[in-house]
Length: 89
Image (tube, rainbow, N blue to C red):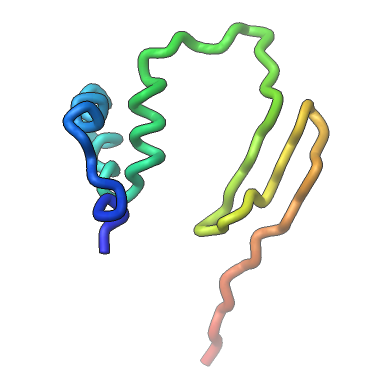
């Protein structure tokens, strides 16, 4: 079942998605919340040259929790991504 079945798009959502480049908008059914977040912030101004994020989270694959978590420039958590098993014959 498509993720968008769990999150039906409203008319407002569809208008937001429509302003994205077509190759990004095409991912809306597969990644509804991520594409809506992108659409909602698409017109925001870029960060200042000296911007420093308070928090950074990096996810790998289909992990539910961040593999890397940085808070105020300090790495607080690091979970190495598990490589996929290679089957030899």
